[in-house]
Length: 462
Ligand code: TRP
Image (tube, rainbow, N blue to C red; front, side, top):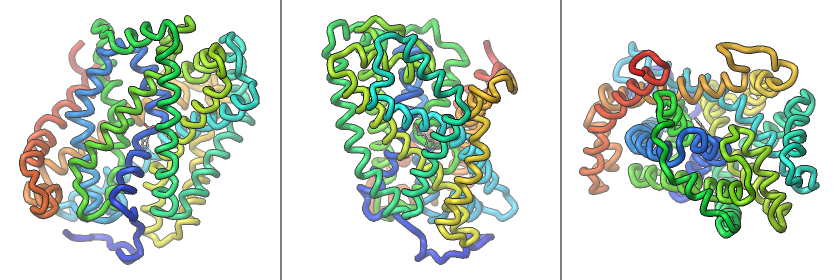
């Protein structure tokens, strides 16, 4: 291992998760987020129900999990931020693998730009749920409340900045005292609240229609674009393809089992997605609402659905609090990518690095925040800033980043390094698992990503 560009911080000064369990929970905290609650249900709804879930599972197993294993492994090996990890592991200083890390940092900003805005709406909705402002069974009323929020430049920016302030206050406390301690508290609470709501939803009369919607496959909806969406979701969900998992891997424990640990993260994340589907769809159908309502499902339909049930205000408040918790853990992991880099590469303190990152985000995020108000007329490639950031990051940057990560690990880093890293130098007796990983990451993952990308962008096939 060479380090072309040594860190200015000594290795001992690096943060790290305190325990293996803490590392796992923090990583689950990164994966679980708005993706589960805001994206997963409406994408399943729009793209053929169970047929889409099956596609998503295939992408998760053959693309998502292998790339997550690769990233955690690389980060833990190099014990550095994403950019310097790629530099340090690169077999030759002349191969510009660090570009993957740099592209990742760009992706982090694009994702944060729209993510903080959606999170801002969620934060705002916690207060609206408590005050009863959105407790109406009439979607016209809840729709108006949402429109009022997103078309107000002042409110859009304000809530985005509140979100930025909250996550900054957590992350300046460091990897263990900030990220690990927070996610350890939030994730169990989130699960409990989600289970309560899923049980409520499933026990409503007429709930079975929602189950049928979620689990009856409609294969006619499966197009190249739908497959690309499923793969993009797998990347987005598992926080892979841009260096978040490299960064978190660099804080994992030396004796932690990476294949099993990452599989647990993946299963936990999948459970939350399915639970979110179970919390949403049975109730939506039970009260006769329209399910495939796009992103507004969360902000327009769901409030009306809750308003229709007894103690709806309580359930609605719980629902938006749990969504806010989920978003917080995910945003911490996005923010950590540039902060770790600035901190290690330039010895900028965490506080300063956080201020710089958040300041930049307030600038890059503003167009997304204002895309429904001041800038609603501005369209690039037929999309407003919000949709463009989302599409460019999930469906392009993440898969391309993941593709290069798989190629790097499978074809450049070397078999010996991979086996040593994933068996913990032979301590774990898991050669079979590692061999399977080795074949998939070399042959299956890259080919699938390339095919899905080309097909989804309409370059090959129909
Ligand atoms: N996985 C998170 C979610 O589902 C979002 C997220 C956090 C993310 N970190 C990321 C997405 C890094 C892509 C890359 O909400």
